[in-house]
Figure 1 (tube, rainbow, N blue to C red):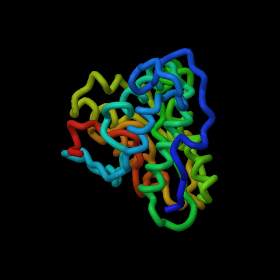
Figure 2: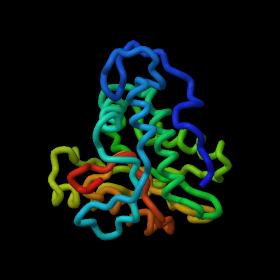
Figure 3: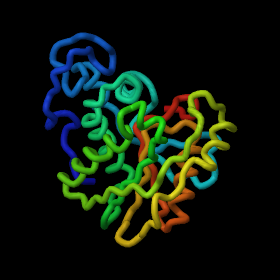
Figure 4: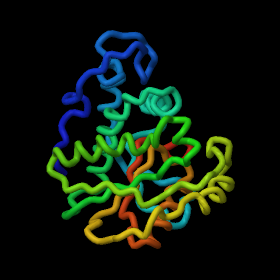
Length: 234
């Protein structure tokens, strides 16, 4: 696996009028929005396989950076729900690490495809939050010598907020969650990696994978930042 370097060492520090995204401490020396203690916590995480139990049909093998807890959880919440858009770069760097482990020594090009926000969610977040992370993740992989393509073949249909749904509700909502933006071409796609921020039941990733398979872009693996602890023992 190519060495991507330190997760935060080559990123320009941000001067933020807010506290640490991971613990809310107003500590000096924030690095890309995180205090030194939270940076150490994030850099100590090692991507590994995860799988919800029970796993839905068509869920590809999934690799997560760590459990949805601690500085990772708080950083994601700050980024998605509290307008800390500058966190896209450090979170993208973390996502690149997950992709590198998920793909391993697979030769040839890699195509990154992410689970898109609904139009409503994108408006609330002033843009697709995953797209903002995928761009710096791809740039980091390319800088390490990877041949990376970024594609957006999926469009999200309106659906209820998954936070308010149980497992059955998530599965039902996921069935009609996506459609193809345009006829997709699998040419030169290489290894397709499906990206998301959090995996809980796996229903969303499975539905996106089925839609991509119908377009000839079956994901080989899914890479996510966090896995909810109730579905995975760490």
